[in-house]
Image (cartoon, rainbow, N blue to C red; front, side, top):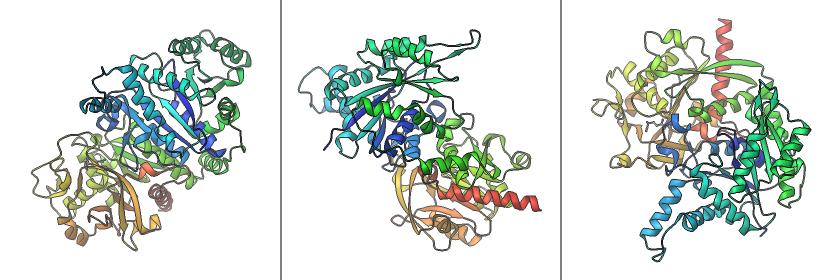
Length: 541
Ligand code: GLN
């Protein structure tokens, strides 16, 4: 077996420079050249995983097939590469310490004093090489969260330093992402923050091999030369990362800058073929040359922070391109919708998505929104909590069970149409204990769901504790709300739909996690399609 090669991506100057997108774009190019590539993210916070974090803190919690609750950057990796990630692709300081402390309790350190160096760093190094040792990859890209110089990043930086030494020359390189700010008053781009950040990295014994410089303006050749000289890299290794109109432009921008070629040269790997980005560029062309425009209302309670619904927004971009449609997603706070104002708030929408979520806040607005979509024949997709709200709405307004609710919101309701799952009843710990990851679902023949997917058995990713209460299945179905997708092993209702409606579907799982550029998710593709049709019909009327 050939030696797996390692690329480490660190960040300097400020956070939010888009390390995840640079890592994903480089991986895309290497993959398109024929290298088996994966990406992993190491996060310096003490939560064992982001599952317990409020979306306002850290954006969406992404879920993998194997049920890991992870950083949202893993979503970008999957969307760019169309390759599944897993628990091993996201490691946090909390997970590292937990594992070391558990080993200490088992007596595995044989009476030694357990220390950051070497015990924590060894644990980090082991995890950094886990995917590499599987033999499945030629290149493993490791993104180190946070900014160089942060106290909490230190054990990771030290682990990278040790690993580079152990791997030997040409087997591991460091890409350092920095900011080259433009000072309007001076009319100049400034290199000093980058110089300082490279110096900080050097103080920890790491020399950056490649600099990726985020900038709002083109870097001149003089400026690149200056950066090269003062940061100790070749000029070809000074890569400009200029602001782009879409993140999906970044692989092409990195190709133009030669990031993949410089990385391969440093790793002593052949360039192989020129990257084949045909499908990618077709996707981009359709995205940038839409024939239609539609408005989709995204109704949820975390709408103030774009990152909270990252995968949903990206899935709409994929589905928009597939339909040659510009999907204008309008975020609507569910707390601001009620039965008196919904006509005003939801008017003009060509389609509606009611978002996933937890807890009571804003749910009445979600229920009113479902009603509006149902009664006005507006294409509707409800995801997880959104599906549960669709069931409650139908029970309340069609079955006339006025107090129908989820026991998550009202534990003593007389009509718990959504109930806590049996397996969840005795769980008290919050971390990693939901029904997570990929589960099978059988779709009823002839249903909207089976038409959308084009197959009768699917697997989708989950993250929930409550479920459709089967005791109400018969009554709801008789009244018109069909359960068209069922888990074949447990009987749990995964999909509900309204055959009487042009497009009304609620899913207990999260389709957004599986939408990629190469495989836009069929539910989003068909929602957008239905919304385009709905708009055309409204125009005719
Ligand atoms: N709060 C709901 C549950 O736990 C829905 C979860 C979600 O939307 N991800 O079942």
